[in-house]
Length: 326
Image 1 (spheres, helix red, strand yellow):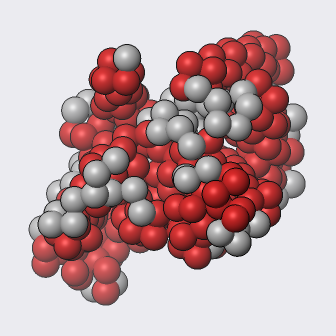
Image 2: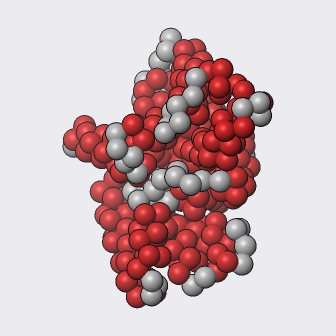
């Protein structure tokens, strides 16, 4: 892919400005409309009603959305580098479906009543199983067609597991409805507990930047990277662990949100080129921007769920990529 250094200096400040603008709109938009003065007073605790709305409802939703977007976009970037395939992403390869199956199992069997950390751990376990399945069904460096077929098979299998638990594992229809609502992906009713549960995203994302140069070398091929001093086996292991933790934690706190890990890395590569040290921080910012924008779009158009909006945006983008590569 051709690098475009002339465009690079504008990308980072543009993403920061857009993110700040989206954060402002997200905190002020809702049933209770707030202006800038009310927002500032609420943040400082001088307006009791505004403070309650901001600190208990909108700020946790905002932070959770930013973390989820950062996790999914950077996780997609790592998946693409691992498989050396630009169509690889956690949701298309079944990793998100595995995380959802693990999280649903934890809810169905009541394990989430033990502690808040049980849900993310169950999601990670499901994502690990799905990742192992991908590695078994598609060899490293596999073609796009083989990867997509593996993802279709895993998504169908894990979707069947989740559907079975929804239809047989829970007796109360009300609880089933809550699970289905969660599986559509969204940021509604997010609290500071969800922000705490998403903290592994911060640690995993911070560990990605030092892997930027080795991932660049890996894109040249395993033998070339090894000849240049890269521990390929160790690098792949770290990449797989980080990508799994990112996708699983994001799914655990926000449900299934698709196409973020496909759309954001692709768009940023067109702007700054393939160098991963540039792409990692930009994907973290770009993922946060994408998720917040989709969440706001859903809120402003009849409270559509986040997973629905990202699918409406990412689905046509994915079809365009397939047509372009054909």
